Length: 115
Length: 114
Image 1: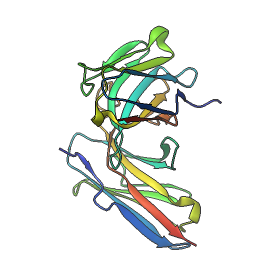
Image 2: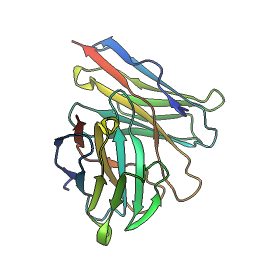
Image 3: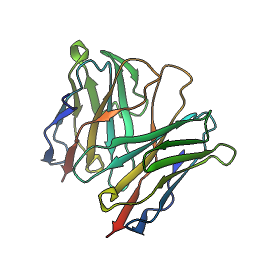
Image 4: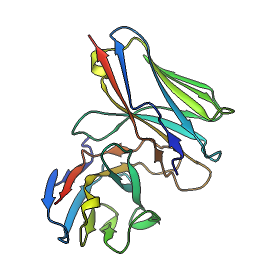
C-alpha cells in the first residue's frame, strides 16, 4: 500500500512570496489533514477535510493560508504572502473513514524556509 | 495554552534498559491518547494508543499507562534498542463527536546508547 505522498520535500522562498504544497493521501482515506510543525514543537492542525468538505479550519490563518481538496482526493495548501514565521515543516496526513480509527498516516512533510 | 505537555525534551538510556516517556494533559474532554514516533526527515508514525476506559495497553515492547485522575500517561519501552532512538510525540483527542482532531505535545527525543 502506497503511503501519503507530498511534494515538494523542500522549498526556500523569500518573505512576501507565495508557495503551494501538494498532498496525495492513501487511497480510500476520506479524511485529510494539514499540520504545521515549527522546530521544537509538535504538529499543529491547520485544516481537516472529510472528503472535499472542511471539518475544522479553526487554526488556519485565513488571511494568508488557503487549502482545497478537489474531488475528495488530492489537496493543496497555499501560503500567500509568506512570512518569516511560516518557516516550518508542513505535514499532510490521512485516515480511513469512521471516527473510531484515529491512526492517522503521515506523509514525509515539506520543509519550508522563508528568508 | 498547551493542553498536552511533554516536559522533558530529551531522554538517554542504555540499550536493554527501560525507557519511560511521560506526558501530561489538561483538557478533561480528552478520552483517547496516542503515541507517535518520528525519525528525521520522515513523518510521524503511529506507535500505540489507549482509550480512557483502559489504564494499560501493551504491544510487544511498548506499553502505555494512563492515570486519568492525574491526567498523566506514560510510554514504557522495554528492552530499549538503538533503533528506538527518535522523537516521540504524545497526542490526545476528544472522541465524543465526529471530529477526530489530535492535539500533540512538543515531543521527547529518545537516545538509546549501545
